[in-house]
Length: 439
Image 1: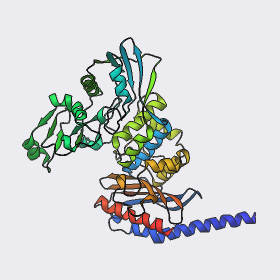
Image 2: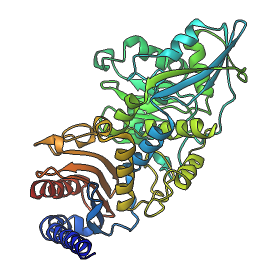
Image 3: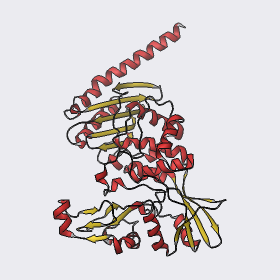
Image 4: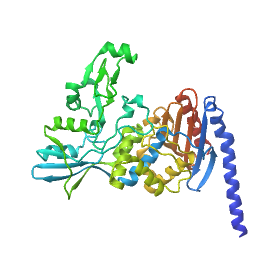
């Protein structure tokens, strides 16, 4: 009994000692930074090997986490989607092909060369019947409506095509995976009715921005541009899948009609899930994140409903989360999202324990890669983390390996600061490097 008491006392002293050191040596660097002091900050540092929190500061307070929400979306995808994405479910009847879309965002997306659903649509069925459209709201709860024509706010639906965006560029500047033919396929329908070039009208009257400038009308698929000198992506209006059907009909030269699938059906898989998760986390792809949450709902619940899958996860797999968050979308675009730093410690610990650290290292960006480009450049392999950025909000949560080979989980959330986001990111970088070097 006395030995046990000594052990507990020693552990308590050691924990307090670490917390005291971090408080004096590392946290002060961050909290006393001139820009950090203008806002609100939450910090949590946890060592999974000892199941100890090294430091907590406002760790149980709620913050707008921006794209750190994608860590929860990643968990939903890894938990519900298995190792491969369902591209669609299909059945044949005579010369007809019946398709039930599965919200796969990789369909005809230029990042993915392998397109099994395209081959199926090309090779089977004189007429293609697509199940009735879902009622997924194209834009998420709490998104900024005036960003509707920005690439980071692409519409959601259960049958996306070409990433639900128009790809505009000259052929010489197209990425390697986007051929001139692909570009023409993408804008073929738009080229006849939607794409208008009015150089002076929009540049001078509306955009007042540096060339090249692009814009889409809010309620119509009419695009304006004063140049196609570089690659631009602009979300198109999906019209609850009507646009998808029209584009497919032109590409396939087959009639596309509405029709319920026949049973039994065959499940068609498209891509390994990690091939979607990696770009989702590396470039913080909002569209991939939103579709991941919708796909998770369909595979877990049998229907498309992001709110329903969030509620289901929070009441089952994530029921022991330290503070129940307000989780409203997959991407973190909504300022209605509210999470605590210890919530992110929890989900990162859960991800690593259920799916393995090595898999996460492949999915999350490390130093000088993805959204961490030009950050943590020296000895970059010691950090694997997810960034988050909205105006006046910056977040970073992930894993760090210290000089003494201690594997830590951390979360730093900054809200309502005034000044440049890059200055906040640099202040957090100094904090993480101090944590890394001292311990």
